Length: 136
Image 1 (cartoon, helix red, strand yellow):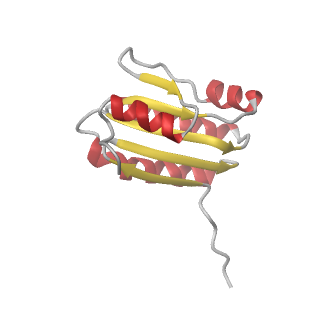
Image 2 (cartoon, rainbow, N blue to C red; image 1 turned 90 degrees about the vertical axis):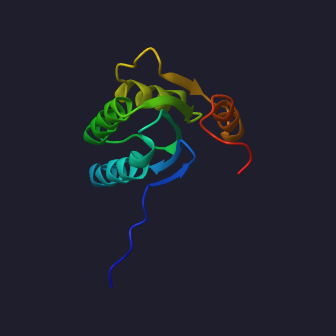
């Protein structure tokens, strides 16, 4: 009997926004799968500027190789019309610092990066910026 492995992330697209929630440790294989799913799901939206919500409140320290893939995915996203990032960060400041430092990439002047308090705050910023329509 084969055990079904649960993904360590959830991704969904709403309007011009990709909502990402990450849980636990990002393994190399899991991160490779995440990057494929991320790019496949957002590809139809890349003709226009789009946004991403990265909810990493339940994320855990992860291997350097996985973080490097996340960094490469950020570069890809920016090159493919990503214009706005909403971050929901862990309460652990050291964990937040590790994630931000390990995944830091050069950002163009047009890219907005905002640290949101919660989902409602992220949604309000995205609606005001025109990436999300009104109530869903």
